Structure formats: structure tokens, C-alpha cells
Length: 442
Ligand code: PMP
Image (cartoon, rainbow, N blue to C red):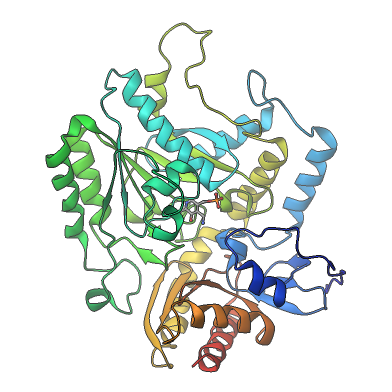
């Protein structure tokens, strides 16, 4: 199904996000079509998608049921006001997501991206303490190397210096736990690393310094994808949960990447056996087809807001496109596909094969570490003497141009996360191509 499209002659006006614009415009990487596990380029090449777009097309690309659901919805109801009015699919989708969620996370607030989901969750946490008379609980705890999107809340709790340093004073009252990655202790880990649970005790120190009465929430990714596939160690999230419970602090899992099957479960919370108070999601809910994000909240959190006169808005927050009809239609069709094709179970079943194929790259030139969990892998390459990130960039570019494959590069770490429909043969193909790329950038 190769699709041919013309390439634009003027690349200048588009200011690309999170992209080296000059390098891209000098040597662009275009895709113009997609189906299942593949992208198609304007010049007729077929690329294996090693990254599920940006960790999002979990059901594969352009799946017929999703495409048809979006088309039908667009012909039926283009838009419904998100405030004061709604449409039936919004409620149906919320019920379906709640049914997949762990514990008593049974209410869903919709937005349009992971960044909006994070800022929504932080605002719900603050407002929750407020409505319960604990207005002094304003501090947020994030983590080093955490990625929580690009809203002002998200970059403040996030732990990536480049995402923070040019953007002013950020939110006040944010503290960061250490990240849990330690190459000496965890190198070549498969699944949850054994080492690192004790680092959760830092939360006790922060509580001791600032007092629990000033702390609103802790936000963590069960697996930090954007900073190189760093899975929470065994027992770490349990410890955070216990400390948060002890002091009345809300625990937020940012599952924008891990939600909807990436680690073999609807949510990573289930894999880790920990029930957080709020879960952010995006990406996989529509398999990347229409922008959508959201926050799952425990019953007790929703109930805390449902006080006071009935005609008064309980939470002063929302987006024009919250629960957009096209996104809801896409979301419902995507959840159907996940269920019918048992894609979360499939990811779980493929994990041993995936990690074995990934670990076979050990010993290739410059490979310092390989980490896998679920259908993800992070591969650290040694940096070139003339600059951090150069080897990673070159690997990503060569994968596209020479090996017909898309991968992610964050600095000198290569990250893969294929659609969950990937076959065993495609896993072999992917790591075969990757091995060639790694050798080529040696
Ligand atoms: N949180 C996490 C954990 C993410 O990985 C991402 C995006 N990769 C975001 C939030 C932000 O999502 P978006 O780009 O949709 O705003």
C-alpha cells in the first residue's frame, strides 16, 4: 500500500516541535502514509515502525475499525460543547476506561494530550486538598529524569534540565526525588530492576523537612520512557504508596506511555500491584489516531468535590475539546480492538522474546546498557567525543534512511516501543536492522 505524496518545497514556515529544525530541513524525514506496523514515505519506501509513532499507536496504524469509527463520527456529530452539554460517547468511553482501571479509580476527566493530563492531575490534587480544608498542601514532588509533558506544571515537576532551564521560575514549591537509574547496579535489566526500592525513602526526608501538611502530591512514571526507558525498581512504587498513605499525600502515576498495554497491562499500576490516587493517560487511548488525554481519579477524590449546591461547578477546569466526539469514537474503537485482539495479553506474551532479541545486541560497539520492560527497550550508546547526542541522532537518521525503520533517540539512548501487533518475525527484523545501525555509527 505504498503511498506517493509530494514533498513540500517550502520547509521554512513550520517550526517543528522537539526537533533540530535546521538539521531536519537540510535532510528531512517524511512519512505520508501508514498501515499496521509500517509507515510509507513520499518516495515509496516502507518503514518498519519501531516506535509506535511516539509511543502511541499501540493497536497499529490506520486500523480499519478505528478509521471507520472516526469517519462515521465526523459525519454524525463534529463537535459537542464540552461544558454544560455533552454527548453519549463521552460517558460510554469514561465507563470503559474506568472498567480497565485498577482499584477504585472510577472517574475520568478528559483532555487532549499528555501534557494537559498532567496539568489537570496536578490541579485536581491541589483543588482536592483545598475542598477538604487543607489549603496548605501545595507542594508537589516529582523526580529527576521524569518527563511529564511541557505545560508549566509538567516541566516544573519534570526532571529534564533542557525542558526547564529556559522557561522562567516555574511552579514554586516543587521538590524532586532522585531518579532510580544506576548503571552499576542495574545494567542490562529485564523487567523491573531489583535495585533501587530504598530510594523511595527520600520522600520521608522531604516530608520531614517540609511537613506533610504542606505536601499535595507525588508524581512518577512507572516507566520513564522519554528519558530512556527507566522502569521503577521492584518495591519502589509500593514504598512511595505506603509513605503517601502515611501522610495523606496523593500519589499520581503518569501513565501517558505505560497506559493501554505498553507493559502488558491496561495500566502499569496493575503490573506493579500499586493503586495510585490519580492516573494520567493519553497516546494509546486512541492508538494515536486523534489527540486525547485524560485523568483517572479514585472515587474518594471525585466524591470530595461533589459537595455544596448542586448547580455550582465543582471543579473550575476543562478544555473546549475535552471528550471531543472524534476522539471518543476513536477511543471506543481502539478499546474494542485491544479487547478483541487481546493486545495487552499479547504484549505480555511477547515480552520474553522481545527482551531476548534486545539483549542479543549486548557486545555491539558502544553499547553501554540495554533495558527492557514490556514492549520497550532503551539502549545507551557511548557518546561521541565531539558531542552528547550526536551518535544517537545519527543512529535515528540512519535507521530511517538506510534501514527503513523508525526509532526514537533521546540523546545517545535509542528507544524502541513497537505497536503491540508486532509479530515475532518483525521483532527479529527490527533488532537485525538496529544491529546494522549500531555498527554503522560505531
Ligand atoms: N507524560 C509522559 C510520561 C509522557 O511520556 C509524555 C509524552 N511522551 C507526556 C506526559 C506528554 O504528552 P503530550 O506530548 O501528549 O503532551
